[in-house]
Length: 260
Image (cartoon, rainbow, N blue to C red; front, side, top):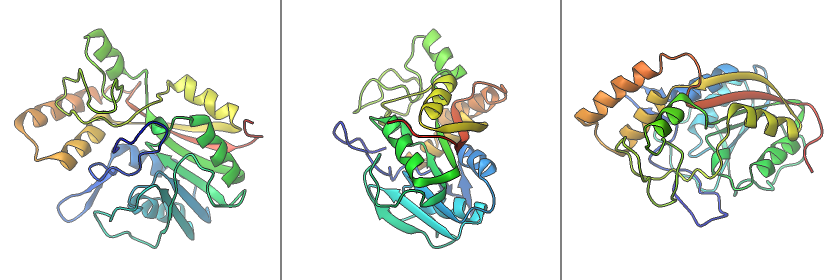
């Protein structure tokens, strides 16, 4: 994410969008593919919060069968690939309030957004307001207690995504030095509690592979170098571990009254 002054949502980062153009196709980040699998089918109205250029909103709406797709972000960059369907673009800062009536959507998607928000509860409360009763939230965010974070701390290096500056990623051994602007990170337990406190029931869970998101970031920044290829191979082996991966992707149902 492009870093902004404290208190402001930073908007879409043109270098990383959760997908990239491959040779004759569009390559989705693994966390996005997990989110597609968790989406309900048959929804009519889908909202993507922190949607970037709107390309993923189009893919998500197509997957769930929504007739209306709305993409919200602070900016509106041009997509890297043609959107497969029409998406309504709304420019607004998160967490809101957003210019929609209560219960306007059946599905809200927010991928890699909540960790950039100074008040995550405000974002969840706004999602609760916008969803119909029984509506679905699909959300992804880095996992604070992933094996990579724990292993990095044991080695005395700054874990990927756990940042100590809004200007530069200090202490990282992975060669990728731009800061992402993460201000809040969750363990799995903390995310479940935050959802419950804001009127959601967690009813689906998946995890994204670090090698996929890291490679997407590298490819959006530069041509791959020999060290990048070696690290990618190492991360692919790490991804074979079937638990405590690096990105949580959850599906939650709006069931109760949101937090005041």
